[in-house]
Length: 92
Image 1 (cartoon, rainbow, N blue to C red):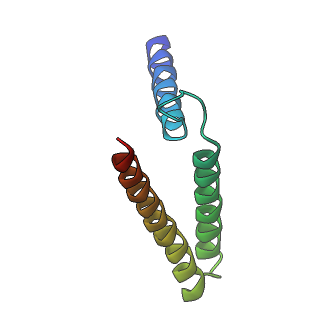
Image 2 (image 1 turned 180 degrees about the vertical axis):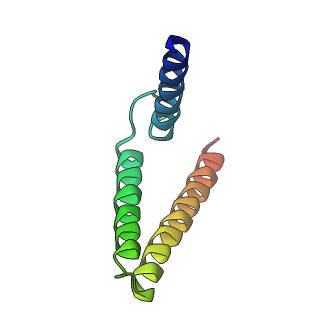
């Protein structure tokens, strides 16, 4: 039994470390404010979507808005990264 508790504690530590990697700036090793806010917004909006689904208040507009918000954010982030990479390439 104690070995099982140790195993689950080790698994939780591993999960926590992986989650922290999602919001940590790889260059500095510090927490990224923008990534932390993005993950927080994703979790909050997903909870609202799930709540509305289970309480039978989900409309196609809410779902479309949820999907559009995250698709637009993802594409904007990719465009910013491409632009940043191009600018960095021009300076070298």
